[in-house]
Amino acid sequence: MPITLHPISRRRFLAGSIAAGISVAISRYGFADGASADPHRFALLSDTHIADDRTAHERGVTMYDHLQQAIGEVAAMSPAPAAMIVNGDCAYHFGKSADYEQFLGLIDPIRKAGWPIHLAMGNHDDRPNFWNAIPGDSDRVKSLDDRQVLVIETPAVDWIMLDSLDKTNSTPGILGKAQLDWLAAELDHRKERKIIVMVHHQPDTREKVEGLIDTPQLLETLLPRKQVKALLYGHTHEWRVEKRDDLHCINLPAVAYVFKQGEPSGWTDAHVSNDSLTLELHCLDKSHPKNGDTHKLVFRT
Image 1 (cartoon, rainbow, N blue to C red):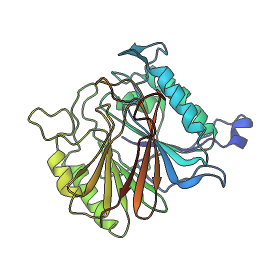
Image 2: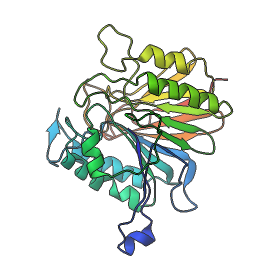
Image 3: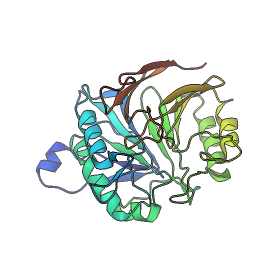
């Protein structure tokens, strides 16, 4: 259930205005304020797990502190990115309304800096509570009445963010036939564009699925369509860069806690060119051996 928070301009913020447009699902791209923003650069976050209680902690991590640090680092990027994307599990276990209020307060510096923020839902998010916290408008894909997707058009690539939320606080996710059919048609419509697809749940073909239930159907949609250059996901709280056939598959790290010892918490600086996607990992623990891990992923043809 991706949503776009448009930036609060400095001028409007200082004037005390609270008018900030919110567009949902499919929209033309809005760049960050100012000529210094790089239209090919994006800050990618996932699995922030913010609770209503700022002191809440899990696995030795206070999630509020981790996101606060990540937002500070993103805000200091120079040149500024065109946008920040959060790929699901914005909230803690059950996606309470107060979780989203806390989350929105933490990301507010990015909006005030004049950058768009694109948010997707994960399995720990709750649609009704999210909508109560952030009312949406009618800019959504009408053919997907129970799912919402976002298309972000940028100079080099188009980003398509999918909705894999099935049940709140239930581990697996699913896209469903209607969304997959829409995706196939949308990709065929964009044959001349380069596409990056994002979804919260990871591809998972094990007998006991903990990721995306309809992984085979998604891969059948993506792999033969060479305009799709990469698939990005979260959910596992791991950092992985690999391939499915010739399609780049990237598991974004969690901003919050990790499940496996040695995995990094952090966020990713993404830079897109006409022929590649370059990713640099920013660990919140700067002494982590993977801090600064960089991959230049050349697009398939």
